Structure formats: C-alpha cells, structure tokens
Image 1: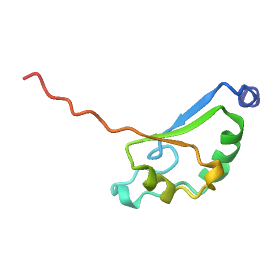
Image 2: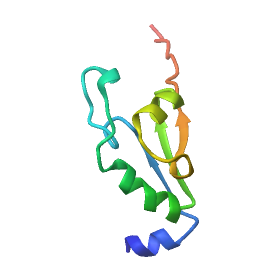
Image 3: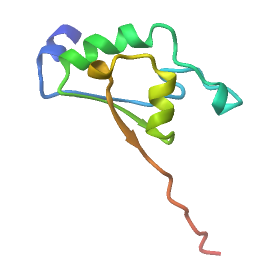
Image 4: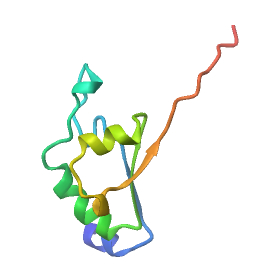
Length: 88
C-alpha cells in the first residue's frame, strides 16, 4: 500500500520537526534531527507531490538542524500560534 501511495503523485505528507523528525527535548535549542531523518525524507520528497515540515520554528532553524541537500529539502511552513484572549 505505501508503494502505491508513493506513486500517486497527488498525495502529500505534513510533518512536525519536534516530535517527528527530532526528539522532544527540554531545551528547544538542543533539538537535533534524528540521524535517519535525511535518508527517510529523500524518497518521500521524490515520491509525493508535497512533503512539508509544519513547525513553529523559523525556517532557518530547520535548515540548520536538518542536514538535507537543498534539492531534497521538504517545503517549510512556519506556523505561529494565535494569541487567544479569554472571554473572562
């Protein structure tokens, strides 16, 4: 089934850096990509229409922490949480 999905060029995968590509650690500045992350990402980037890292980190922070050649780097999407005001 996964091989079939990889051939379906309309599918996409969205990943978070912290907790998916890197262990969650107490100090966010100490986070490092799992050593296998680059070799796992490479075939995904080649096979899926979209592979994106959705994160609250700055794009430059992900590029620095994820040793992937530029042509194999997933799309980076920085999401900043909205500030929610309480009704009370």
